[in-house]
Image 1 (spheres, chains in turn yellow, cyan):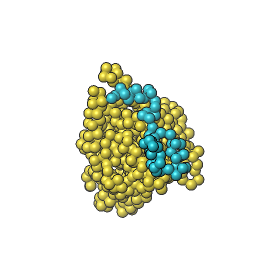
Image 2 (cartoon, chains in turn green, brown):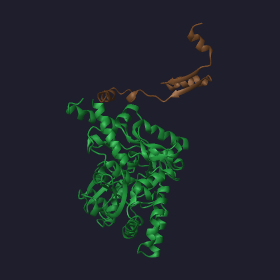
Image 3 (cartoon, rainbow over the protein chains, first blue to last red):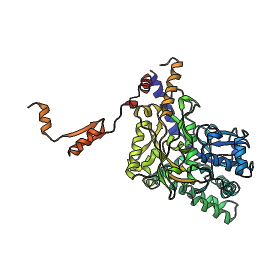
Image 4 (cartoon, each protein chain N blue to C red):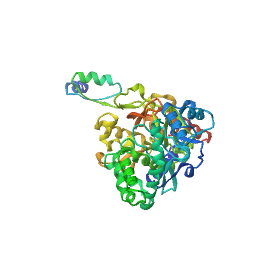
Length: 420
Length: 56
């Protein structure tokens, strides 16, 4: 009896996920478009966390954001303000938002505005800053702040104008194409970024900005393979948000990490978080760094795996093993394993190497607990100290207790309703 | 000769479920084996098994 209710609820959730139509609409300023933000709000990746519990890269990104906002002049002042209780910290996920790595969003930051056209809900994400020393990895030096200001003053206004000339962009189709071209949508975004440039370039040229500025913007996007990540993430977010709060569903709608804890949310369990310690990423470190330098798992980018791409679509991206380690065969096996813990095969995201089989989509907490197979996540590695940046990339798994605790809560809910 | 003895006169092709050391020992004797990637449901965790049973 209860099993039938769960299956019906999961079927509904999967229909919502598979029918999602993530669409890029516009660029806005965080405080003006994200509900519940003000000058002293800092959004961050992962489940809720207090300043004192934050890991190095998240603290670094908060320090950088406070300097960027003009609320502090230097690291010392920013650290004092961050710990003063004056700043309100909240997960991006509580505001229809996602952020890679530290995931810090502050009031003045420009954000992509997406809408799931099928269900009319919105999502938001900052614009990707590029590689090297960047805020999302906890760096906050002058060059980082200067780049954030450049994004605010040139990149975002120019792209906003280009988007207005172009009109909305169907991101689901673009992600589908990127998967056919060797991306998995989380740690490899070379094809997606290329497709975006191809789509926007004719409109960037038509904007009212100077030739020099247009060249600067095109070069910036071209220099950063991950530029498209900040679009796949909110695309997955607005897809998954439409499927939340469906009674009796055991499908995971959020996975996220704040560098200290890993957290999940389940459709049938409302807005509750189920958390455990963030894992250490197993992967390849850049020259000069050792495992000692790595921070535990961090970022909202695991929304990709939650929606059936990223690590779950590894078989589509054999080239990625050069970045995260392992062999091309490992990439295929990893995707195959994820079919064991998911509810459906994606109707749109297809994997050429698996005869165009749909990606494994919709993690079912019952299957994770029963099989003992944890979701495989493709991710970057941040240095544990604030201000350093990315030190590598690899694979990581969530702690099992998140799924066990969610299962227990799910059964307890049913018990209080006398349904089991 | 019983059926079981007949079996052991033939070339053995073995599917091993469970302890991988059994599989390794057979491999050392050049016997064709396949190891099944299997674990007991919920890794044998009784509390989790009971929760899963309640949902069936």
